[in-house]
Length: 86
Picture 1 (cartoon, rainbow, N blue to C red):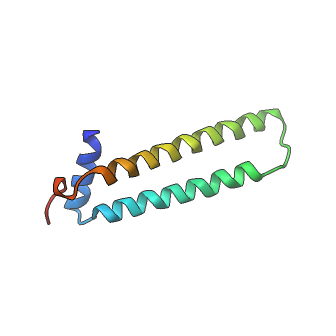
Picture 2 (cartoon, rainbow, N blue to C red):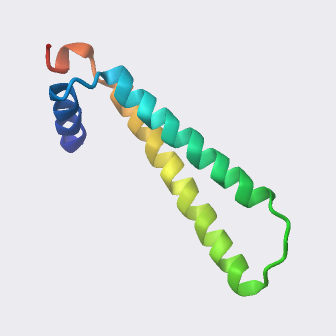
C-alpha cells in the first residue's frame, strides 16, 4: 500500500491533513451507504433485467464501502510521525 502513503504525502504537500483525508473518506462512506440503502429499500418491480442491474449495483456499492473502510483503517494505522511535517 505504498501508493496510499504517496497519496497522503501529496495530500500533505497540498495542505490536506490526515484528518481531512479521513473526513473525505467518511463522506464517501456515508454517500455510498445512503445510495445502497435507497436501492435496497426500493420495492418496485422493474423486471428481471433491471433486477440483475440492481443486484450488480448493490455488489458494486458493497465493494466500495469495504474499500473505503479498509482505507480508513489503514490510514488510521499510520503513525503521525510517518506523515510529512509541515
